[in-house]
Image: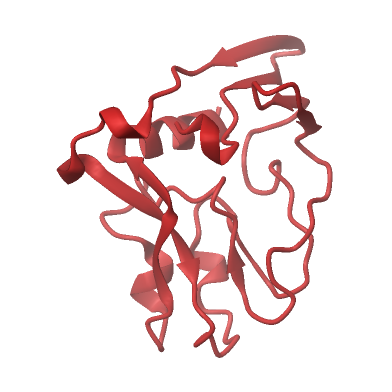
Length: 153
């Protein structure tokens, strides 16, 4: 996963009434072959706020406009998440909405449905085709699978 995009690589999670640490190898994006790169998705301003995408996301990475999000929403994450840069956040701490005007996707939680479906489900159901790749969050398929495993302990 990409440390320059603040994607966590260590999470202390409660499991079986004890703390477990989950470590993930950080992969530099510039070492991935171009053909293996994919991207988290984003919702463009063309969004008509129909809400069709939100229930389709297996990671609960899609939120209504103005709604706070949490790493713990729809995932197995709990406890503290360490970002490796000296900052940490509680998985259940409310985060500032990405958008107050349209539905939005939290890139740190988006896996393009990798490991769940053959294609991103938000893009498949969107009536105006506004769920598109986010060029600011390029990740390999392996990174997306690793993120999925990290979120769904």
